[in-house]
Image 1: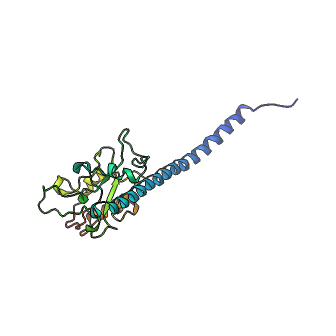
Image 2: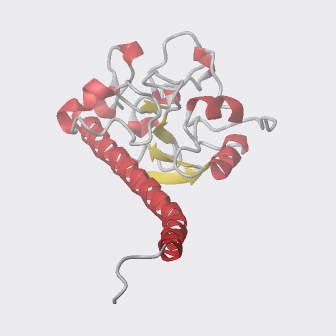
Image 3: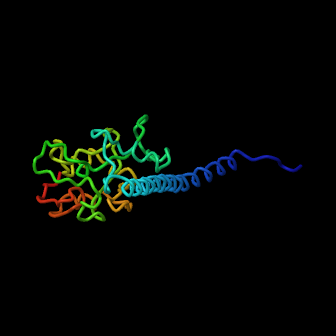
Length: 216
């Protein structure tokens, strides 16, 4: 008589092999999914950069899109130039907000609270547009359409404050940044933190960082 079916030992061996293969494949699949999220977010930021470039070309002597505080929120201003599905990163942890990204408030029109504030609200007024961050990703707790880096708004861009507002580790300890010349970079927190400390850095303040902040 021919034996049919599996013995219990054979079945257990097959299950063990499947479990081993799954344990080997799942990290790879997880990394591939995370990579896909990063690419999707980069594409979103690139599309916002293209929309911002067209807006600057069309409006008010090269003025950059502004914030809800000025009644000129960049989300509404870019609507004629961009698709509606680009404002959320696929890895945004906030369940209901409409946008993941926020503006560097050093690039907003001065509100008069700081008599020494320089107006960097036009693209042509930025000394080093390739070096200055225009937009970044927001943490779950940061829900405004702009960051609070400028001292006139009671903010700062020390590493601790930056980490609280910008989702620096969202993409495998990296985040995506749009610069004033509208190119996109994916940077590690280590490299960004060095820029926040560096004297003269124009990464956040177009006028240049003047003091070195102690590490958190």
